[in-house]
Image 1 (cartoon, rainbow, N blue to C red):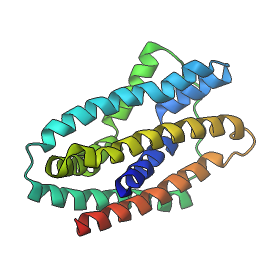
Image 2: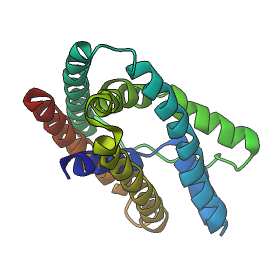
Image 3: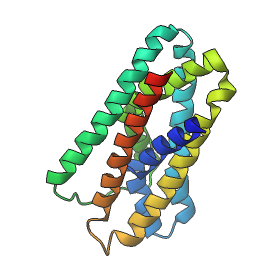
Length: 203
């Protein structure tokens, strides 16, 4: 159960944080293309995560378990640090205006998807959080760690859809709503990072 909660928490953070795909989805929602917006929010991230899952799975089969333990510590510290840094920046950051130039084209969606692939947060998550958990599956059985990935997938999808809808419906009325989403995401990131550090220590 702890793995499911940890995975869901990480997924919710990923879904809340605004990204280029969400900006394209928002323009489609504004045009009334709801199915297209839903596709943009859910399918490209699923393809990216599937590719990272397969590559991380094979990579961490080669890493000695003793080293994996220290990678897990690094992951917890990084996640906590990123969340804390985000909270600190939000205190001084001026509200950013959403770009209205995001358009639904194959090139636009491809570029936005590649931005997800190359984002530092994606690599940190798979290399230092999901990777050590996959390595734990190598030692204790992959069914043992499956709840983490189920929770992560469910948390991400739910948060991505809900946050996109909320930004569409509320952003025009409440200009600082996006800032509130970022505040919630970074606070949750700090909590998840600390939780992951505690778990790494107890393993």
